[in-house]
Length: 226
Image (cartoon, rainbow, N blue to C red):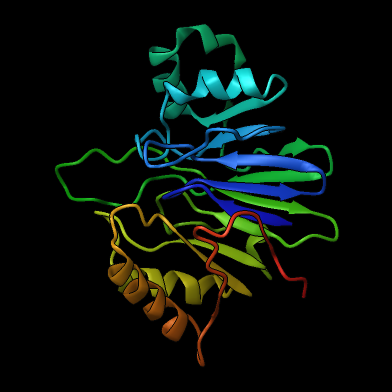
């Protein structure tokens, strides 16, 4: 498995011959991304879904599938109606298959920002293939509960957001107890602030600390095997 951080919450997962692009939003740079098996979107917010970017991605990746959380699908259809017949909707627990790779949507609702902001649906994505590390991209929520999360290898962790509190983030990491943590959702941070958040997770995400695989700006990074 190789992971590429393409900005903020956008991650390219290259595993078992399949290439899955997650959450190509407005803070992400997806120009030149090729050979995609699927584009997956966890929820409707613009930092996770940038509708004008999707037609170009499809032109560059003619065989790619579009799988979106339902509200995100509605938003994409409204913005890019020509894509209507090419969009599929994800549901919690309904397993998607791309060759030997499975993607299991988990969770239900976006984390609370504040009482005045609507809470859209949000689907975390558990990606697995035989003989490969398992990975969870949680979107914008810390509510993922599923048997597929047992013995999780890689947890992509949102480290900063209007809805995020580092105490909740640390508790989330400790609850799921991944082998490795990959920091994401960092588009609002400068380098010093980002280092501080990552440091809290690394030091307190498990008794004795948790291993962090920081892939920002590193291109395609191989996930170490067990």
